[in-house]
Image 1 (cartoon, helix red, strand yellow):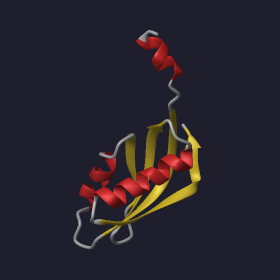
Image 2: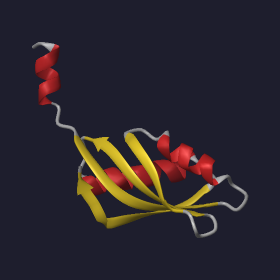
Image 3: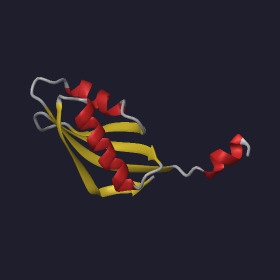
Length: 99
């Protein structure tokens, strides 16, 4: 089997959705956005709202082989496990759509 045939069999999906990231007081919001941007599978992070203190609302675009909700749950778990200054991540389940 050739590499191109293997790659053709792999199915990747791109999803967009909104998340809210709650972080510890004293953390830099730009750093929080950069940390989310560095997570595996994330292709785009756009700040949608930054008016609340210690909360960033972000529009996320990611690429994955998982289902949409499973991919966003994985993003949430990875962010909260990997970055101690991220207190909580809320997923806007109704905002998730295939890109």
